[in-house]
Length: 154
Length: 396
Image (tube, rainbow over all chains, first blue to last red; front, side, top):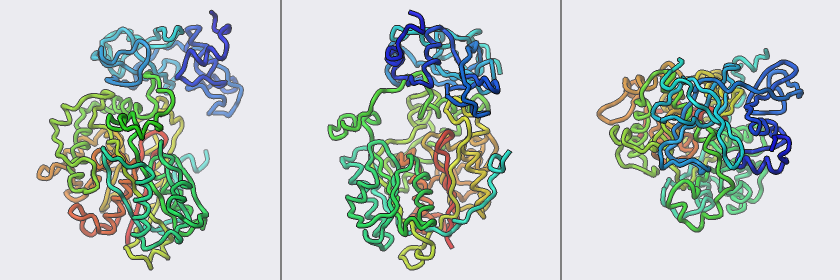
């Protein structure tokens, strides 16, 4: 099924409990296409997250979206020893990493998800990562993967 | 760039014009069988009586929008307040409601206002609460996804940044946790008064690593309440009026937990800039310091940002000012940090405990934790994102 074929209702259901509304639907349709998108102001060129309907720099409402590379460095990092239930998340098997990644496109432009294929004990702020798509509830879900395990970029 | 974008002008016409004249608290418990409404009424009645007033004198009521808590209209009705001209329900975290009450008195929206802060353990917050059938109606909607640092998780995330960016150990967090517990042992209202050691801290279970169980505030049942009126009217009331010298809240953009500019640029910095500009005193010679401790990393931020030390230096600062004999921090051998034990050990009051301690200390009524001759207090509440706040208080 292509991103445009999925109904709005099915999109909302697929990504619950994340909030999909008219301001964020395009962002989540990007996930279906394996694209991590940022809001993009067509008036001044500012890219920002989370997706919002107005450019915070110039107040233009001519905001669409642009795919970002998904490369970046771990800026914030939590290891969840307990947390909200989710399919494929087993806190009993070990702490579940949640990383806020500063994306390569712009300083301060960040996206938060888990880090796959990693021993949590080896993760650290500063590591270089790239996008890694996983599946949850039958739909694509963006995550990260460490590019060079153990390498700390800062 | 407009002047508002750089520094606060210091304009503060409300300075010393509104006074806290009544204080009430139920004390805090992790196993109470009382409702938020019962605790709210108890604390409010205690505060109004403490002020030497009656229901008929109270024409304003402000309460935070606490999850599961009653609204101000419900408490006004429960207390039989006959005629109210100002009521509101600001966001949780204490200074939103407190500042609204101060401004309501100053503007003439009401004459005598009661601010009531009830707290109730929600079913997800403790096993005892989860097993209480009378709390079942408090279960709320869908859980969040794990891959998010929204709300509480945001502090664990920024704690990781704090440790990495400043290349420091968890020592600051440990000292903050131990200090609060030691102080709580002198506070009859506190929920936990058993001693805490550094070994206990380092042995505590990780929850959202790098933060452990003892980095997080303590869910409790209980309530605080304050009565405020004009500084003029306060002179005729029974207690020494505690003057509200300045209040503010602070917000930067972006303030989303994962987009926040950095440890050097968030809500606390806006609060400090505005509060310093509005206040005639700061930390030199300060008597009472009550920094919020919903998470230990927040307290480290406040200690640094109010100017006790530089960024990332809270651990070193706390070690230098640690009083081994009493197992807590005494800044310059004198200033206690949260003499009441804070949210970590008195209980998670979201800042009303910090305001109460400032008031009680300035009234000279803090018992064996009293700072002798206390004249000035600084309470800075809330965290980094969208609830940073602060107030200065003084007495004549």
